[in-house]
Every structure is written in structure tokens, then in C-alpha cells.
Image (cartoon, rainbow, N blue to C red; front, top):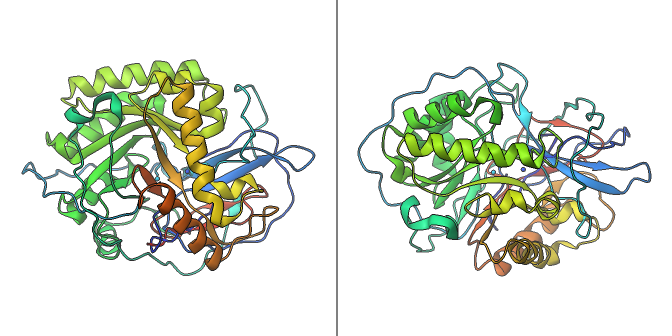
Length: 407
């Protein structure tokens, strides 16, 4: 899921999404600033009639990484709080992967993936100075271990998305990551999108193993190498892992077919089991792509969707929670009652209007309050995002949005 930056208020919840391909409007848009956490950019694709068709999250290209050893001692109990968590891209030295995608309009359903002209490369968007949301107040809740979670889903009381990139798309150092987490501590789960930049080891060290990680395999064409990186980073301590995602909005962006993603899930499960991991595994996609390709959910241990009310265009910020909750119910029902986790949601604090959806700090606060109310304070909801993603690029489909999850 990387284009315009979206910032969601952690003061209300948390943040992080990757949609791409589809017909794109080439209109120039102005930069928008939301107050959320830095994460991936969300790109909304529209047809010739300027109607939203799909969304995508743009992540930073993977940068060569050197996995650092992680402590083998058992992690401290996860920090508890009432917010939620999205991430990184495939391993490429410079170009960042598409950030987590942002959900398009509510009733719209993404068609089955088909060849389409890729969206033009977005130009870097200038973002406001980096801002971060304070950690949410603790909200006790027992986070089940991977073995306990099974097909019922990972389960958590608060989560936020995090990406380890500087404004120039270079990797943040271990000390920079540590500094980031001094300001966003307090979440039970942190969502990462990939394995580049030594991010897993750096986050584990920065949090002193006090949080669970929703890890991500960004490039399904490099499954074995990404599994090896994950295995080396956790150093045998799989209790640090809440769950693992395989791909982010790959069907929605047209990067892979549903059957290819389903096959990748099976391959990843076998490789991770061989490495010692027995917890939940799922692919992440937009709510529309998931509903249109429900096999993505049935092949996973739980359903995982990126869902942003802002990209619906007809939903007001105070109705964001109900909008997302309605999609959760639709997906779970389509999957025979399987648990659905929202792996990205929020509202931009800055950017261009999307019909009735207006970016502003006030609307962001209202949307996050609505999301918290609809999800019991942030349960099974990853807030997007922990910091302004200054490294992301903007396009005509992102509305110049900047997300930051405020608590």
C-alpha cells in the first residue's frame, strides 16, 4: 500500500496502507497534511469520470539490510493501550514500495485484477515537519500468543503502523528508530510492512521486546529470503510475533492475481512453520479487493483489510467508525464468519477534499474518535500512521493526503 502521506491522530487511535494500478487521473494535486503517524502512502485510483475505483498503499523500496541479532530472552509483557496499528516494501536499494493502500468509496468493489497501465510514478511530496502522536493510555488486554490465536485471528487492544524511512527514502538508523519509539510507546502491537532496513531487529531493540509485532512479507517473489530475515531477527523467540502478513494490497494494485497470492500464502506457511513459527498468517488487501476475491481471506488464518473512510468520498469523519465496521461485517460474513482485522484505517489531517471527505486536524480527531468508539477503543484496528511519511510520493489519486494517527 505509497503516494500521498496520511497522518492519523494517535491521540485518537493510530496509523498505516498500498493500492496501485487502475486508471489514474493525472490532475496535479496539492500536498495535504494530516496529523497521523508516518507510514506508507495511500493512492486512490479513479476512472475517466473522476470516480474512485480503487486505492493502494505505496511503500518505500527495500534497501539492502543486514539483519541484526536480536536477544533470545523472552520479551517483556506487551505494552497495553487503546489504539491500533501498517509498512515496508520489497527489497530494493532505492525506490520505496507502494505504501499501504487507502480504501476507496464504500460500495465500490474492485474488479478482479486485470492488466492495466500502471499509475505514473508519483513525485515526492513535501510534508510538514515530522510529528508523532503520544502513546495511548494503557488498556489492559491479553494478547494471545501465536499458538493460541490460530484461525480466530491475532487479537489485540491497540496497534499502530510504522515504517523506518527518512524523508530522502534512506533507512533510519537503530538510534533513530529508538528515538521514534520513545514517543510512540504504549501500543500493544506494532505493524511493520517488510523486512528491509533491519527494521525488525531495530524495532525489537527499541521497544525492549515490550510489544508484539505484526510482521510483513512485502515481496511474495522473495518469500524464502524474507522468511529467513524474519527468523534471524526474532532469533528463535516467536513469542514476539503477533501475526505475519503475506503481501499488502497486491490484488488491488494489480501486482498479483488472487491465485498467486493464495499460492504465496501456502508457501509462506510452510516456510515459516519450518522456521519454528506456528502463529496466524494472512494476506492484506483493500476491503473491496478482499470481498471480490474472498479466497484471499479463506486461504488466510484471518481476514485482513485496509479500510479508509476518507477515500469513500461520501462518508463524514464522525461516521468513519461505522463505515469501517460495516466493511468488517461484510468481509466476515462473506468468509463464513472468519475473524476480520483492520490492518489500516485513519483520516488525513491535511490535503485536498475528496467530495464530502475533508482533511483537517478537527476532522481527523472526529474520525479517530469514531473509529475508537466503533472498535471498543481500538481493538483489532491498526491506526495509520505513527509518523508523517515524508519519504512517500504524491499523485493525483492521493488527494495530497497526510495521515498521522493521533491518540
